[in-house]
Image (cartoon, rainbow, N blue to C red; front, top):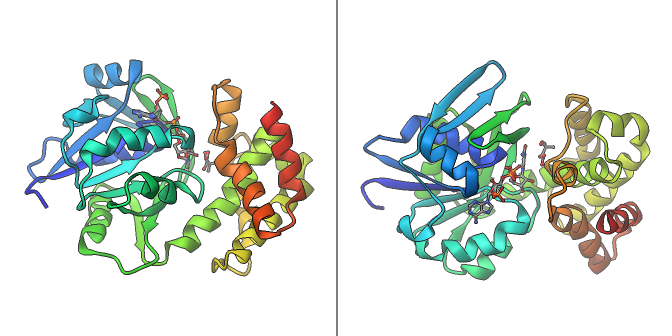
Length: 308
Ligand SMILES: NC(=O)C1=CN([C@@H]2O[C@H](COP(=O)(O)OP(=O)(O)OC[C@H]3O[C@@H](n4cnc5c(N)ncnc54)[C@H](OP(=O)(O)O)[C@@H]3O)[C@@H](O)[C@H]2O)C=CC1
Ligand SMILES: CC(C)(CO)C(=O)C(=O)O
C-alpha cells in the first residue's frame, strides 16, 4: 500500500455524503489518509467552493475533502473506493472507475440490493469487491448539503470468505472517523436481511405512493406478504437468515418515523428519469420465477411500478 492511503467516495448523495463526510472530517488534510469525493454538477461546484455540509438533528459540520472532482483520471490508483451511487448509475460509474483500480484496490458498494458486487466483478474481474450495506435515512437536501434524519447510521461490510488485513483496516478507518462500521466474514446474512427489509419497503412505499407509516396503517397485509415472498427467495438461495426475520423486519418498519420513505420512493416523487425498481423489486420477481418461488405480490406491484 502507498504510504498515504487513498480513499475515494463516489456518489456524494444521502449515503456517500454522510459516511464520506465523516471520513473527510477525520482525515482530510492528514498525513496518512487522502480523501477524494467524486461528485458532479452543481453539487460538485458547491462542495469545491464551500465544502460539504452534513446535518444530523441539531448538529452539523462542514468538511472539505482533499480533492473533489468529476474527473476519474485526476484520481490515480485508489486503495479503497466506496461506491454510493444509485443502482441505475452503477455500470457507467464502474467503467469510469477503471483508471483508479488495480489488483490491490478494494471496492465497497453500499447500494441497496444484493447484486451490486456481482455486477462490479463482471466489469472489474481482478479487483477485490466487498459486499456492504448502509443503515441510515439520509438525503441530499440541496447542492452541498446532506441531511440525515433517522436515529441509526451504521455500515456492515465484508465477504463470505476470510478477511485480509487491508479489509480490516477499512473498518478501523471508519471506526476512527466515528462511523459505526461492522466488518464480517459472513456478510450474506446482513446483506439479505437488509434486502428483505428494503425490497418490501421500497416496493410498497413506491407502489402506494405513501410513507412507511401510512403503508403499515393501510396495507399491512401486503407488507407481510412481500416480506414472506422475499424471505422465501433468500431461503431458496440457502442464505442463512434469522429464523424470526419476518417479525424483526416488521418491527424495524414499525420503529421508523411515520413520515419516512424509501430512497426509491423519493426518486419516484422527484420524477427522476430512472429508479431502483429493477434491483429492489424486479430482482425478486425475476429470481423468484427462475427459482420456482411463489412471488404473486411482488409480481403484481412490479407490474404497477414499471407502468408508472
Ligand atoms: N438515502 C438513504 O437513506 C439510503 C440509501 N441507500 C442506498 O444507497 C444508494 C445511494 O442512495 P442515495 O445516497 O440515497 O442516492 P443519491 O441519489 O442521494 O446519491 C447518489 C449520488 O451519486 C451521484 N452519482 C451517480 N453516478 C455518479 C458518477 N458517475 N460520478 C459522480 N457522481 C455520481 C449522483 O449524482 P446526480 O444527482 O448528478 O445523478 C448523486 O449525487 C442507493 O442504492 C440507495 O438505495 C441505502 C440506505 C439508505
Ligand atoms: C432505510 C431506508 C428506507 C432509509 O432511507 C433506505 O434504506 C432507503 O431509503 O433506501
